[in-house]
Every structure is written in structure tokens, then in C-alpha cells.
Length: 117
Image 1: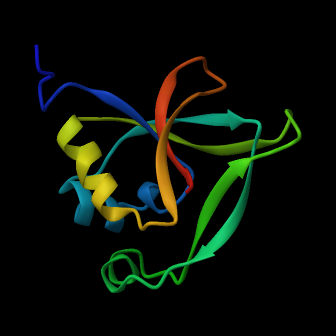
Image 2: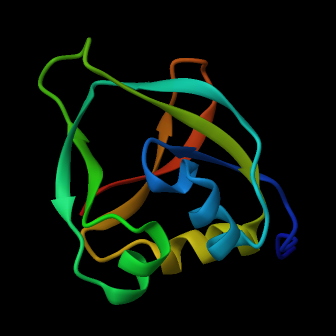
């Protein structure tokens, strides 16, 4: 059976997908979520050159995360419940520096997140 396009999925954001203007442009609505953390990852920055993403976020540099050699490293963010269609919209928003992976969060929930490609 094919999954419903409205089936809820969890998306963890530590960056611009938490910003209301980005949410409105990407999903057509403001998302609500709750705080959570990723364990074993560290954050740095990537320069954004895609004109659409620059216009949407208004930022030339976005955070990006990579697995850390230190298991106690943490990246704070927000978990959002979105539809599969909205997940596809998030895929379209993210530039090629990122890839989407499924991770376990500190809360124990599994969520999609964009990490360094």
C-alpha cells in the first residue's frame, strides 16, 4: 500500500527551517514543534549561493552538521510534525550541500534531518 501524502513524519531542524519566513515560503504555513537535541553531532557553517534559498532565508551562511567523534556533542533544534508533501518541499529547499537522513533524537523519537552531504 502506498503511503498517504498527508501521513505525518517528524523533521528535526537546527537551522533556517525553524524561521517563520522560511516555513511560510517552503510549507505555506507556520510550523509548531518542540525542542529536542541530536547527540553525537557538531555544527559548523556552509556558504549559501543558491539565489532562491538566499532570498527565502535572507542569510548567506546556514548551519550544517556532521557526525562528531565526541559522543557527548549535541545539536539543539526543534522537531516538527509535517506531511510527506511538506517533507518533499523541504527536500526542494535544501541545497546540494545537505542530505536527508533519519536519526534518533535525545527524546528517543526518530526524525528526518539534513546533514552535510
